[in-house]
Image 1 (cartoon, helix red, strand yellow):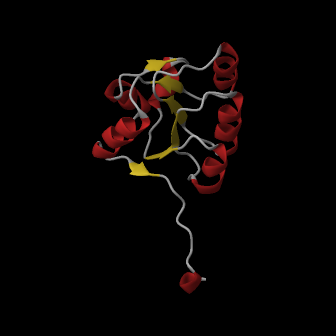
Image 2 (cartoon, one colour; image 1 turned 90 degrees about the vertical axis):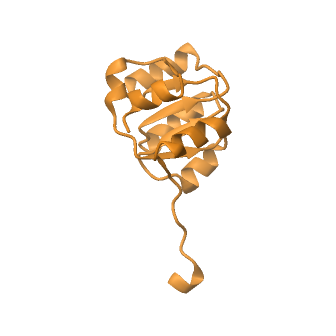
Image 3 (cartoon, one colour; image 1 turned 180 degrees about the vertical axis):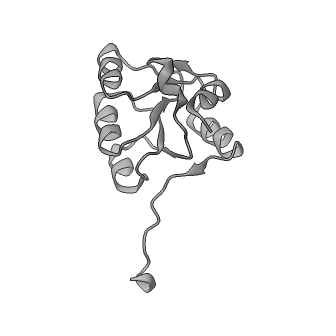
Length: 123
């Protein structure tokens, strides 16, 4: 699914260049704790979050995320938008709650992006 399809599906507002919306999205990860994203999110995922602060951009850069969707109508500030544009990182916002946004995207065929941890038996 392309990011522009996600934008339309979740009725998002785009804060960065429309050219960035041609990215292909196959996995999503939803969290407000950036430590969870660093620990458990697959590289290259789309992040769905309600957290709007500069650390989200930093974590996205570290994890090579394909974009960020802010939920509950939260919008990034000008400094975040500028930094995201420098990094070619799409920023979207939707009025939907995180639970609803995730459910809708899951029903459209997007997979979760959690790294599977090895059990003791697999070690």
